[in-house]
Image (tube, rainbow, N blue to C red; front, side, top):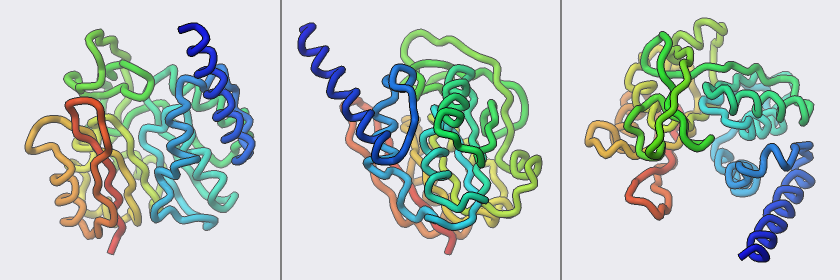
Length: 247
């Protein structure tokens, strides 16, 4: 068992080093090794590459930035004078996000320790694994122990207003169930400012909160759905990806 674990750790470090060398990242392995699957998804599997505005001067908003891998991807694949807004509510994740941006010498990402949700205020963030923190108390992936952090929450409309954002060329969302509150409380006038929404949606086991309902909301607000797929899972849960492009 010990030898197997050592082989797995060596393989993981080799994969981590390969990705960093290929992309030109200077990430600290010991501080990022627990998020290797996220790193692979962003840079190897190109999870957010569909309809991404490569090499242009754009505005990108990253909701649920985690350790900052997508924000780094966006910075490295757009013009140097692009604006990238990176939003992460968890204190621990946010610290890792800032450290990774500093280590990779990324300068055009503006960071916010807060959450985007359906209302403005201070709410509980329920914490689980670093990739599963959620504003939803009964979110299935939190696990049995439910610790909380108080976090500032703003609606997408308020965030856009506060930061004087005129247009969002690419909106990335991975917010562990909060996507429903965000999108269902967003006005048509705000959707009109967004060119592409690329997001993960999560299983709430509720007919009012499904991928189909998100698709309906986006289509009602002028988006063409160019990707809608469920991902493989070993759990009794459904989740997947949606990409909507303004018609």
